[in-house]
Length: 216
Picture 1: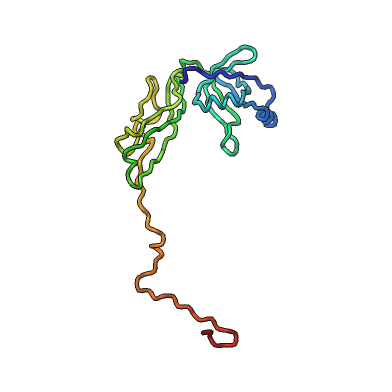
Picture 2 (picture 1 turned 90 degrees about the vertical axis):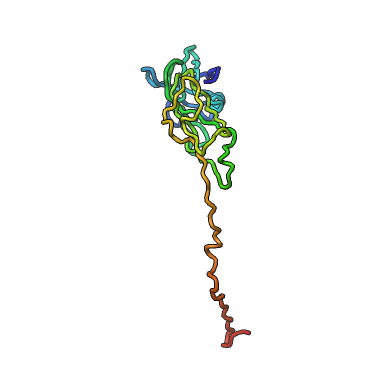
């Protein structure tokens, strides 16, 4: 987890509904719900710019500070995107404590190029862009970085990842994260359509003029 948990000012929402949430977003606020630890779900709003900045930096845990002085430590559980899929329009946040064991998806970051990917026709197929991990809240990593130049074979599996202490994968060790695939060179489309050897050439028929005889 980041050394410093982002602190966001949270405002409790009394008004609900699509029309009101649209007004919030137009005013630069991001609607969210906080739930967990036996308490009723609490509708809140957060500053959209500050929240999205924290998410882009890889934050999974947020510290909420309310106007009345109360605080909450929450885990980002779900993000709802707009119909174009390029903007966050709502968040679900779960109350947690730093020693609580949780399951969370963490982004996989890759650097370098595998030796096997340098072969002619080779491409890298990414089967798992994120990985689900189990660990204490305080131990959640921002990302898992892997140097692909150290990959000896043609596949990277979960068991080959170097994970921080106290962090374990949910998926089996044999699950494939990425693999190198050799693309077979396809025959040119023109070859399949080429006429057979010795085939008779196309004969063009002279166009007849009006009145009868063919034009020479």
